[in-house]
Length: 271
Image (tube, rainbow, N blue to C red; front, side, top):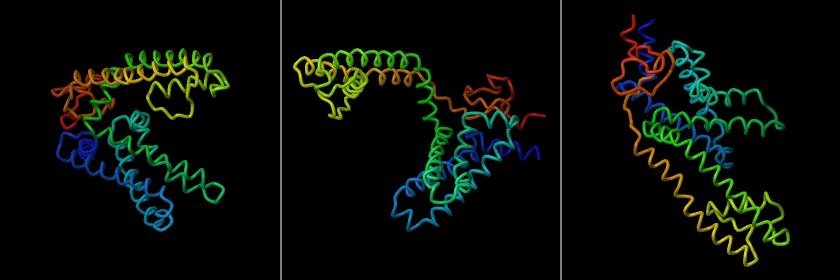
């Protein structure tokens, strides 16, 4: 039984073996199919004409994910740790909507069912587990979190100042009815979205708007540069082993032991 558990663990949690890569590819295809079904269900004509086909496919995919989830719990050394982990919760949220939908029947609960079943899009978050490129990007974003946080605080402060000044310049008669509304205009203009629902009328307001528009182009480049710099310095490890003890998965390529808890990574060599 221990051999079976170790073999299943290697297939499910490690992508640097042939069986693990095949498992990940198959699971990726199933995840994408599930998201595609969710999108098809949102189209009224398709939902009406192919309701039973879509429902059958959804239950088949849900059962597959249920088996995968139960198997993951069985093969890890600390099931509770996996269940409460980020990916464990994502796996659970990917399953619950279909099962919860069974208990909500009747016309009065259709909105509730739709809201619950739309949570199936959480399955797309499972994709990041199997994408090395995605892990590198996520790592770069995390490494840049301090700089990006400072940048966002600066943008919010700038929008507050510009919005307040625009409220004083334009006033309620020109559509800038409050400071929050003016801040909304400042954010829309800074990000170069430009809905056009609010626009300055006075000369001073138009001059300020021109400055804000020019600032917007410069501001967009800042977070891009921060993340790009982190990506260039990121080291893309090819080690896809997951520690069976603590579920840590960011090990060096030549690692034999987990850098977080010290457990041996190769379970086949465990006594």
